[in-house]
Image (cartoon, rainbow, N blue to C red):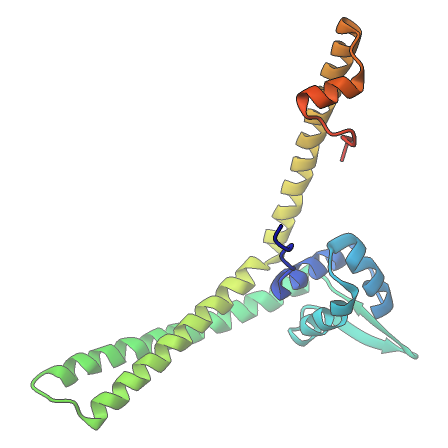
Length: 204
């Protein structure tokens, strides 16, 4: 059996932000190291690094009160930070594409009636560099779009709807099992085994 795949660094950041948005409270690091593993599946040893990376990105606020350090986060600020970051990245991407277009045009001009030259080699190297920058910027844009608070809120609503649906089908199973037991005098354990129903089946 293959080992269970670990949670990625970006997924840990997303789950940590969800924890702050759901609790709407202030926390010390020790409190987060207890809450995060239990509620979001983030191992305690990585909590400090995850929180610090979010603080560095301006998504989590922190302040020292007396000898204690507290952390908190609000969706409105996170949305503003990501929106500003997206704008900056899109501006850089626009400039990168502009330079890329100019470089490609220069390459076309350089090929006309010319052999390989130092200028042409430099242009090709610059083109490769710009293409790599474009790729990195596109990845950054996708990362911040995926962590938008509005997207997280939508995910929470979908989870709620999924739980309601699961409980509705669980209720249906219990009703059918009850009818079969009364109608045919069959033990519940026999029904479970016959239809592959877990003995631990319960509402979510």
